[in-house]
Length: 251
Image 1 (tube, rainbow, N blue to C red):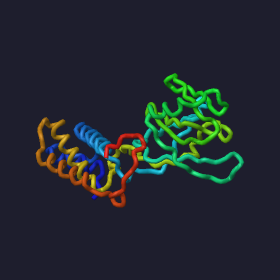
Image 2: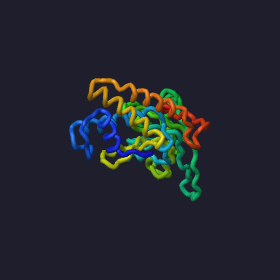
Image 3: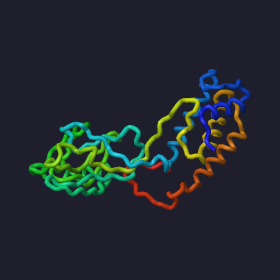
Image 4: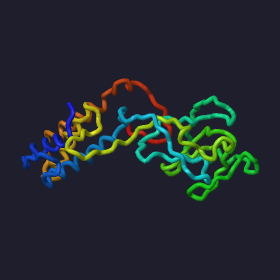
């Protein structure tokens, strides 16, 4: 069963013996409960990688010719699972997407630091931290890392093909953070099976925050729902193992 935000707020207010409402902005208390639901929603999103939030996406171009081997990470990206880049020669129409492999920042620096900076095929690129990285300038990227969780840095780019890495040539699989919609009719972006857990977590938190008292029944239901969700094999994902591509998983 799906619950709208208004239905969740009404259910919680009813259990707290509060005034009935027809909208989430009808009373101050209803507004407070709606905010608590939002907080609990994002806590649940952070606790695991929800399969329905996995997307095939593209990274963003840096737009900075002084950092041609940089790509910007989308602001709503939670975790990057897979990264490919188009490797295409200048005079070729053949398109080949090949994996770009993750390296920890210190491993990445060690990798590029051994390059011959006198070579015409190596360009010194100044990072945002003012350090210089020897980057190969005549081949597509093979390895990537991130120093700030805002930009992806690759070990090379092909300057004969593009002045910078291009968004259109990236192919990634990632988990995306959903947007919160604050309307009466909005349904929180969770699987149907997870909505009861959101209701009970929000109810327990509302009692504690707004009434300064515990609701043992809601707490027990919330704990039971969370235990069940932790064991649930989400449709086709059950049993599949994923490589760790750099970002720590909360699964």
